[in-house]
Length: 163
Image 1 (cartoon, one colour):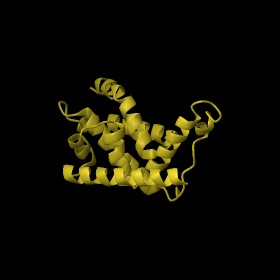
Image 2: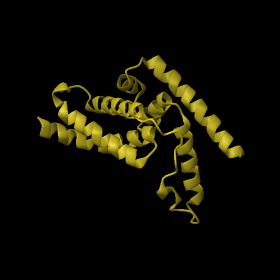
Image 3: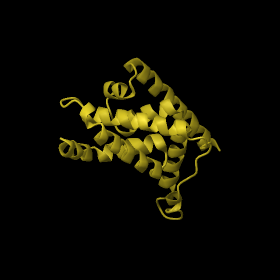
C-alpha cells in the first residue's frame, strides 16, 4: 500500500512544489516543505481513504506543515531575494526577471491566508471548491480572500511601478 501511495504522491510533486513555492516564497523552504509533507503523508498513510482526492489530502498536509513551520519561527521579518534572482542581470530577459521578482515580492508581502489562496487557485489552478476543502474553509470565505488578495497584489504592484 505504501509503495503504491508513494508512486501516486510522486506524480503530484510538480504541483506540490509549485504550491510550496507560492506559500513559502523561498526555493529551499519550498523543497523542505514538500519533503516534510511527503514524510508526513507516508508516515500517516493509513489516514488516507482510497477513493478520495489524494491531491487535496496532500495540499492539506502541506498547508498544516507550513503553519507549523511559521509558528515555530521567531525570526523572518524580512525576506531576501534569492541568490539566483541576479543570474540574468544584463541580458535580454532582465526585464522579465524584474517583473517576476516584483510579483514574487508582492506575493511575499501578502498575509499568510492570502498567500495560501493565491498559491492554490492562481498558481496551481485548483478549483475554488477543492481549494476551500484543502484550506478547510467555506467556499465563500475562499472567494472573498481571493478577491482581497488580488486587490492587495494590484495595489502592491502599482506602488512598485510608481516608484
